[in-house]
Image (cartoon, rainbow, N blue to C red; front, side, top):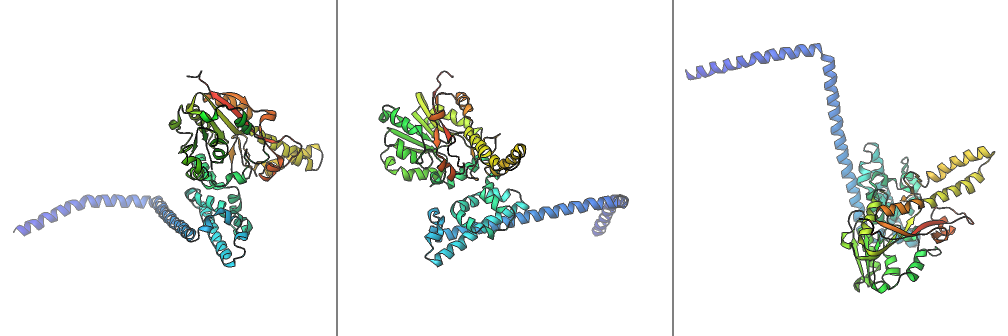
Length: 455
């Protein structure tokens, strides 16, 4: 009897549930019948979108696995062949291993593998603009620094559109924020950047800082000094540590700090040099009120323009009440001067036609062969003298106001014959051109004191 009652109740419940389901189903059927094509289109679009999303995620994951595995293989070969990571050998690979065909062929196969890895990363921008280039930017830096000469000698082996220009102009840095791009560059240029870049301490450069250090500073042995943005430490080793009581060197690049440790090892052991890994734009509090003399050699103008005022403010806080700050600063006024020389002394003179035609042709050539080639940007004060490494500059007339806002009062700004001047033969090797008899390229030499009148 109980079973019959249970069966009856179950049937009753199912019947009661079936009625609304039937009514709802009938309504849906009528709607589908009425709006069949629009609903079918919407369903198809949603299905297509989901399919595309799943494909993109799968493609992204598979590419990440592929690029990571390629990078792992490269690293394994570098561990097995450490000489392939030594830029002093790899830049002159044909001389280094020319007498050993086996080693030379092995290196060339490895260099090709590295650049094919980089080209694979570059080609991902078709589907994922910038995603993998940003993630694997260190691969391009590594390849350019160590295997750049091999690439130039074998560039015809790479057929991807735009890849050659991408490599030659270091365009992967454009996918990074300016600070990250700068750090990546310096982390890979730490050992010898001063040997292939124009800098104030090259032979033949007129540098008033040398005379200032020698003649203008009294009681050196009692003063505590700092080199802000010390790079690989040669300025500390050759000009500061032998003469001053204590020298602090700061840099935000781990590799630069390690290079300075290597170059200044003798003075570090004596306690005369102390190195600090600090970001000047963020915090120099460890040195507040400790410095008699602060120095900066082309290190206070990073790519990010908002960082410079912060850097100067931090440096001002490190100075004692009567402290001085001495800086060499890249001049954008000098860059404009070089650009004008290219136009007047080269492009205009080489153009054909009447005066107006020559002017138009020279202007077009200036934009093509100077502005684009050297990535000249007058609005942001950017210029790449070697066509690849973009550097920010500042106009000579902007220096005093910039320092004043940061709490520094300029007491000397080198002008005319008192600037850091670079001979034209050095300029020719580093991309500035060759215009003998014309005013030479210069950097600004600045001396400032802590402005105690500002609260």
